[in-house]
Length: 340
Image 1 (cartoon, rainbow, N blue to C red):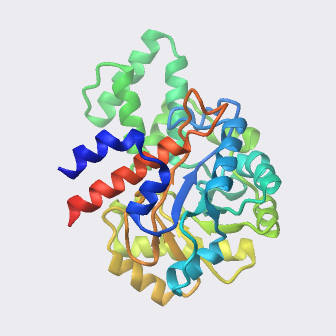
Image 2 (cartoon, rainbow, N blue to C red; image 1 turned 90 degrees about the horizontal axis):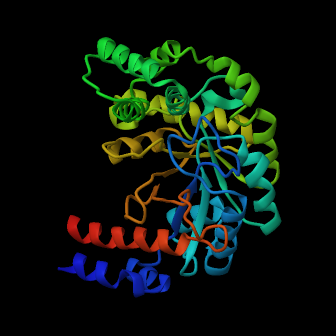
Image 3 (cartoon, rainbow, N blue to C red; image 1 turned 60 degrees about the vertical axis):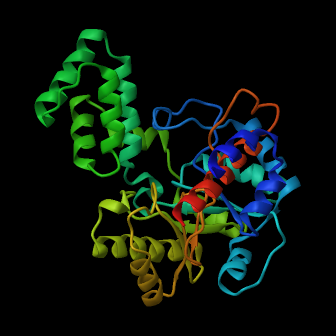
């Protein structure tokens, strides 16, 4: 009964009403990249905002939220220090180069704190994330002539026992296996003659050690985003611990700080909270853990976040965050009630 009622009135409620209904928790917000240019390693995964749209988001956040540093969030979460209603923390995942070249100048201009979560295997463009390889594969397939494209579909069918009829099914499969079946994406890169190392050398999609260190010097928090950016729900307990511990250790070396917050690739769904609590207890440098479940409550050491990437037709003129956040708060309220 509550869910249909909330859906009916969702468009008429101000954001402050959602915050009041949801309680005084800190809003987590995450992005991946900001770019005015199409990025082949991104564009078949998700939409992203351009500079003007993202700056509109920053202006909206600054006017409507108390934007916290990571240290202030720790005080709020673990030490019982309460912040004012309407607090939020801004984060970026994946360590993409635009975090330095595009996002950093805008954050400095508006004096907005941020946490940058880095997958440590990709620093200095040493390797490429399987998701980003998948986008390159889809980009190559879409550029092929029709007959050649169907030949690729047939090759995948033969190699992986599939029965795809067209490139749309191939695209869906390519995106779905990128999180957990890295060998399949590497095979597809070879089939399509994609030179991943050349792309890394020329396009430089990820930040360098020096750029990350400069972000830390600017006062931004550097966090870990795993070593290899795999779906944690498919990993063993020991693999989960190694991914968290190794990446946090690497990030503390980059940032010069004795701790590193950690953000899960994709999500922490299916990962035992008791296991995560034990990992943090054994390794004091592992900071708060960040997930992607909107405004849903979790353990005190878990921070859920809402995605701000998605643009819309109005985003160049005004921020679309009020609509994105209203949907996130609504989903959090109805899901929370359903889980009780």
